[in-house]
Image 1 (cartoon, rainbow, N blue to C red):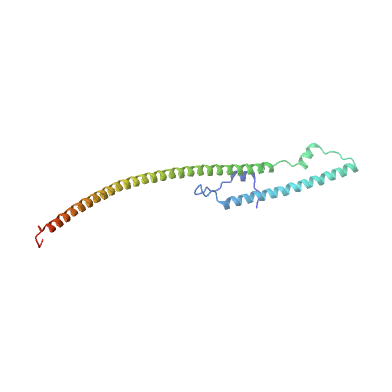
Image 2 (image 1 turned 90 degrees about the horizontal axis):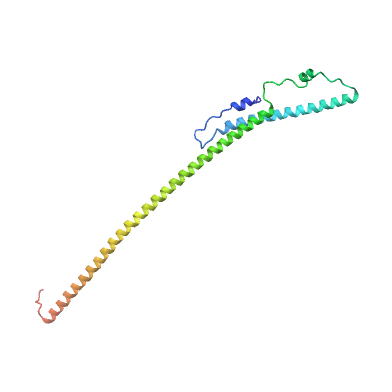
Length: 192
């Protein structure tokens, strides 16, 4: 895979998620992070190789200085041979910093969005919960009031039935006693 440039990192645009719950396409993000990793590995290898060359060159310079006096090259030739002119490419450190900054910004945006959506869903759930509880309490109170009213009606009917039973028993008892007295007195005609 070709090395990434800072411009590649700055220009990357991931597909927007269908919903905020799903986030970015994980495979697409993983492929990009793999490319960044490979770039870092390649740049690290180049850096180690350059450091090794510098050590070899320093050792050679020390060796030559110990053996004979070396004329210092002219400043222009040093600039052109030892340190080639910088290209338009951004230095590795800046590329790494840009990648890390972009990753941190993306992370911060996703976390902020997630927290905002979480807070909104919690508020919505709390509102619905409060509404459900209020509705349930209102229904409970209506049901209790209706049951109390029905209880009062039933108790009144029971009381009326008991009174009717007492009155009926009293009348029946009176009728039986009157009839029994008439039987004893012989005033009741047969066939009655």
